[in-house]
Image (cartoon, rainbow over all chains, first blue to last red; front, side, top):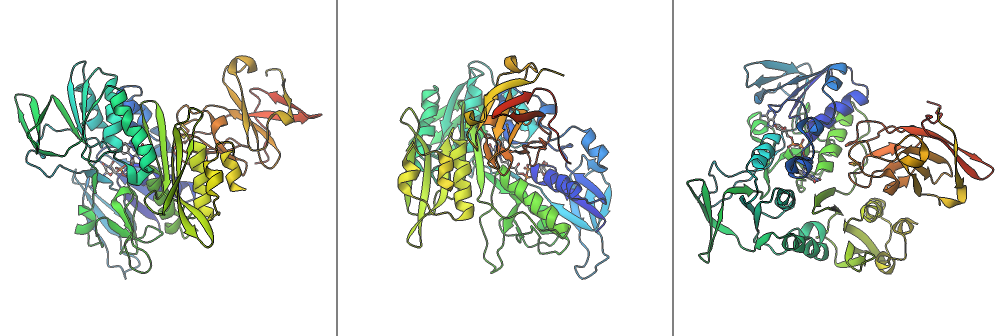
Length: 412
Length: 115
Ligand SMILES: Cc1cc2nc3c(=O)[nH]c(=O)nc-3n(C[C@H](O)[C@H](O)[C@H](O)COP(=O)(O)OP(=O)(O)OC[C@H]3O[C@@H](n4cnc5c(N)ncnc54)[C@H](O)[C@@H]3O)c2cc1C
Ligand code: FES
């Protein structure tokens, strides 16, 4: 292997580059992304939207990092990928760029992420609706927020809820529209989901529990309509209802795609010299079954590391339970593992008696194992839970719930 | 180089925990955390995570590493090396010595390392 083209410079693509160099790869590396230098996305719905940090602070590393490591960054989109015959060991892939350029390499990585899903209702495709995936999206949304702006957020998952919190600082009048009450139960369990969802109302945000059926726009005003005839009027509308993996290019290149570019544990696709990482990739296990596509930061970093290791014939890091975080209203939320698996939930209260951590348990042998956990301002609880899950340590529900037992003691 | 500071007995920091020495009290102006690793050794790093501003003293200490409480960047306690994203900058280390059961911190003086 002497050259790699990474398509997409989000977290997944950047990690591949960082790990390839960190693991000693000295060949040519090109990163192709219309957004230019790689930057981090979580702050887009948090500090960056709120105006607390600037665009430079979003970058993973300073621009000179790439030059010093001889990594070429092309600020263009890849529009076509021509792959060589898999049997031809010397064949090279050709990547065509939106500026007409063409790059050649013997390895290609798809790290194209996802695009915001559109609302499948009349008016759901209006150009005036905002989504939040890129720096430009966040800048555009921020520039529309002023005291008194009527902001409607459709979707109270991670991005909608974080944007609601950030928008408060602008004195906007925020309405949060979400059919599920409370959202996020599959991610963090009911107990914590309820506590978090209540924070919107406490912060003065109007919460509408219903699904919109149509959106109309006229003279700069949006009318969001519901089945019962009610209407929410808004100046600015942000739709945050999840993503679709960006797989068109991979599909056109002939890779196996099914709700994501299919990959093995080393992030290898159906072509032996092509890898896929992050939000665009979906695991296909050795027995052929398909896993769930992850859309979290840590998954993209882990996948980027695994891909770089596999490309170099090195041992990939051991898989760990999936983990994510979210920040809103000054609290930090984390979840690990699978809160919808297992059979019972054990909670632990914080000093003021509120639920701080929830652990999901499944029977294992003659005991119980933690399969998922989540916490609000309880990072150590989640770090410990992650180790309990990864190491398959038996859990004692009474000790999990007992706030006089330090979390770290649970590992002993 | 600043004066060494006696920061108390080794027994004040249980294994697997850390204490913060306020920037105003350590002459560097930056909070420093002193970690008692489970291998029995003591280490000191700038307390502020190089990613954002989380306090590393609140992190998870294991295998002579600290995992940041916010986004799980890991730092080597011995060298300050940033071991995983989102941190890309190393943490500054400070020399700590144990003398007659007391912890002596040399604020601003990098920890001696073999590598
Ligand atoms: C606003 C926001 C907040 C988030 N907050 C959190 C959080 O708090 N916690 C958490 O765990 N996760 C969070 N996430 C999720 C996390 O950021 C993603 O899972 C992660 O960024 C995925 O990395 P990726 O590299 O797969 O994709 P992305 O980071 O989306 O990067 C994909 C890149 O591919 C590029 N691309 C696409 N098509 C092409 C093409 N044809 N040619 C060239 N380049 C192309 C895009 O321009 C983009 O830069 C958040 C995401 C967003 C958008
Ligand atoms: S603040 Fe430490 S990892 Fe983000």
